[in-house]
Amino acid sequence: MTLARCIVALTALSLSSGDALAKAVASVEHARDGASLDVILIVKYSNTGNDDVSIREADLPRTMPDGRLWNNAFQVISSAGSSAPYTGVVVNLSPEARTSRITLKPGDETVIEVNLSKNYRLQPNTHYQVTPRGFEQSRPNGLQQNHSRHPDGDTSIYTESPSILLKTDAAPSRDSGSTANDHLHPRATCPPDKTLAVTQALPIAAQIARGAQEYVEGLYELNLGPDGTYLTFNQTPRYTTWFGIHGDPNVPNPTNLRIKEVLSSTASRFGMLSPPSCNCPDSIADRVIAWVDPDSAHVINYCPKFFKLPIGPGIATGSKSRTIFHEVTHFNDFLAKGADDYEAHFALPEDARKLAVDARDLASNHSYSFEYFVDNLDSQE
Image (cartoon, rainbow, N blue to C red; front, side, top):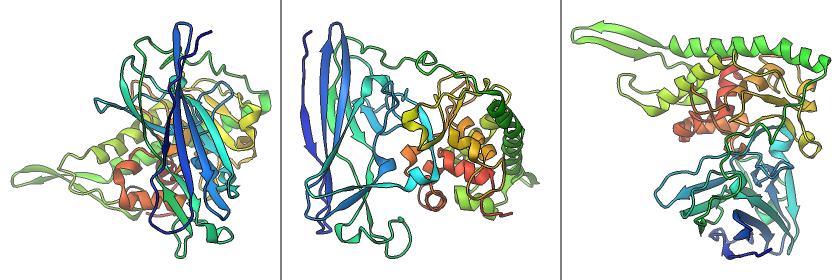
């Protein structure tokens, strides 16, 4: 076996805060195995300071047993400016997993290896800029303080990860960008009691999906004026909390169109779902509620934590029906491209509320924003 390797090491951008911070160091390895080529990315998180540093675990790339990412953890941009399609899975982390942290002592490091060829549809003979998602870390002197991101006195720092440049080989990568992924994650038939639990929650999830779609459609009103017809939009507190300020409905706006598209497509998919699957590998079961392959035949995989949830809806801590809705938003099909989880960066309600103010375009493609909106988490009109 002949291996051709190209190693490029990069150091993360330093922050000017003066604190001794953990620094991410990334490298990429190309390995040729016979006629195939896999692009391997090695991401290293190291504590180069003199104090303990904690990192939010949800920010670190994680993979399934077969090597596919839990979430779209990298930005993979070609030299032409297009994003490489993501072909991994999307997991719904438990509330505990969304906030858990790992601690690196001075000199410690954690190293994660990801096969990009299994997770992104890479074109041959193409230059790509690859950037791991940023990560949240503590200031060294704030380990014992509150790590929530937004309250006053927050001691966490959001650190941008470094980018690396790579060029794929002229030969196509093995399994790169395969859209026939069902064979990689075979559906595991649920036992009767678990199938019943899903069956009981499904109509409730479908109902809140339809209700949310009708709610938003009802905010638009067609009026007749001296110059013809025009639209008005009723800016309600509920819409504002999760999606921000709509703006003039007579002016085309891709963010507003995307919000309507996600709600409409999700409500329509409930008649297309495959039978429930209880495929939940042991390596993810303690941190994941459910997961999907967005390109599958609308298969939702349920983990044991799902079955401990109340049926819902309208439960602040989460429910079966709310989880099902969330998973259905992720599917890619003829109706629409699925929504994203942004690697659970904005999974908490306070994060989603902040997106509505600071980044409406992200909120319009964020499954958690839709989940909280549909469940009317803040009980707003």
